[in-house]
Length: 465
Image: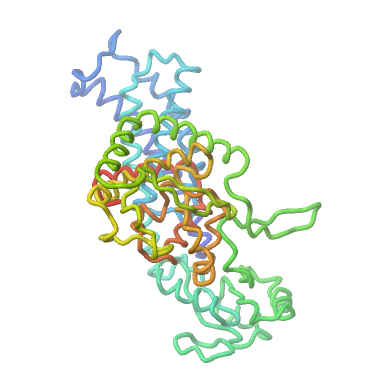
């Protein structure tokens, strides 16, 4: 059995289990609400116990809503597993399914005949059972793949740094469903991997070693060799993948597009444009306006306290670089002495920076010094969420020393970001911060923004941001 066959089988089993769980959840929720007597004190249902047949009638509709929602959240993909991240996605899907079900009951069925308690309980049961079902199937997949069932046998054609990355990735994930058999056309001696032979004998190698997949590491393999492999394997059911020379610039959003019938590989698109960009900007305007209104008394108190406790202006302005290299003045409550930047230049502040005032240390610990940045968000210089803006004097140095550093400037800077909520704040690894920022840009969604904001508030509450 190939990996693809096992994937399809497990997806079918997942759908079947989901249908059983959803139907059972409604039946159990009905019994718990109306027949067990345990929840009589929590909710009153006028008119007595509704007929059980009414709830049986809505099971198909509810099941369809759930299946469509789960598919929309990509929870039927082979790579979906039973991690905490998958559980978080399942929670969001459950909320959407509940809202959609209640809407259908309201507009199509006689909603007064259905208990909201039943639907809420059924959603809770479904959430738990769907996750446990996926956990069991995930463990089952690992068990059968450990026996060599449903494992794709892979060979690497050519070898370079990208080939080494594939080998390391497969070594780090022994339960991925892929087994690296060896290397074809290796130009160097690879001690840990056997050399299978030459690409001129590719058809024989595929048949002898029962290969399911080839990874061709270009440019060590010429275009003529790739064409020869494609022609030789034309009648063999084997998947062939070519690693392009620009692989380090290809992101998860890469797609094949067509320009007047001509296929093109889209390496990059402008993020947060169109409707999504408008929605993000509206969210920034609404939330920054509300924040400035609600927090204005606190901000006035902080500004007055700064002026009373140390000489100098209450608001500190500094040039930063944002989207597309645009320079702007960022606003912060002054947390250091007025002459802190004299003879120092552009440099990051340290955790126990001696330039801090006593009040400034408190403000920085609880991130209160950044409250004026809501003005930057309202003006459009920044967003609530995005890569943190850097001082203009450091951009040139970072651009030369950190790969892909300027990719952060493809979107607006943010008050908080994915790197910051993952512990990369202040004087931390710049390379790691860039990697987290690139992940945010390539995987942006409003849901991710909300997640980052909530994690930021939690970090502030603990005083660790």
